[in-house]
Length: 374
Image (cartoon, rainbow, N blue to C red; front, side):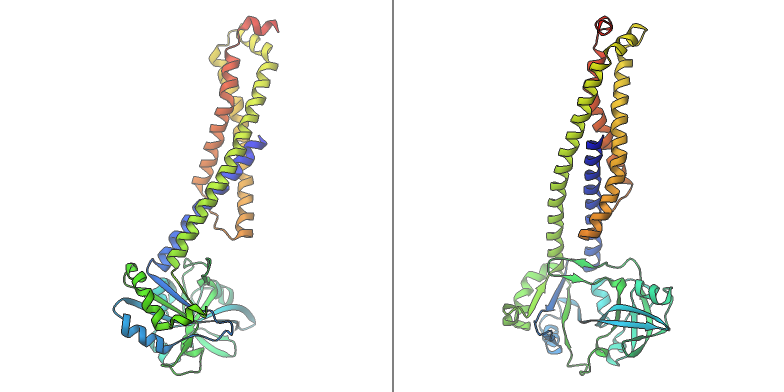
């Protein structure tokens, strides 16, 4: 039973990991799309390597191939409302940012071009930030202090937006934990002479990305990439690589849990065979008073299946607990749903049938006279 429980626990964790990975991939692709490119400033001195002149060059050379361009500045700061204080991720950008990440709103509106050009002190809150500060998502028109300046809340993002993504070279912040303000408010420079640390590009067609790469290097400066002051990221490619790695991890863990489950099945099989040998006179007595071979077969099959189902049920609870530990330690998406539970129960039922079928057949094949003679 312990062997079956451990095997089922490993199996349901692998299934839950697969479910979580597929859901995360679908949500990420839905938000990022397959046609998004991100240019990051990675200079060691922390100074932004991107500026408005590069935006104008991109617009002139590739404007017909780009559906959105969003310059971004990131900053962590404290937010205050009455006596409440919240540490939040501040994102300075423009109205196009929402289009790049397909952000949905629960209340109000997102940033508008007017807000950026006029340096309006307005803010769009992530859902978790709004709930932490105001305990409600209906806060349009309320004011709060970000750092030393007062801002008017104009909108709140929906709760089901893109969660934080952790890929090899892309750290996408959790939208529910962020506050969005006009980029021009975060820098004292003129509107047409901005500097920023990240640029989001959305192409009209993902097939244009490979051909556009040399042109992007030309606009931003090939030496900048060679000196590792800039890096160009295609999120879809990173998502595919992460999905492939998770698939390999699933196969590896599934192999281990299958081996453990096989050991558990062999253990139940061995115990059942021993049980048949020690209960020969019981079997003979039952046969002598009228039990058929089918009755004996059913008796041992039911015993084996019950052992396996009890072990499988224990394994389901153990797998649920193990999944919580894996999700918190390794920050992997784990989803336990009805499909996962049913899969675990079906596998445990099959394990019971496989472990009991041979001992049951052997018990049913015993001749009553020989069984009684022992």
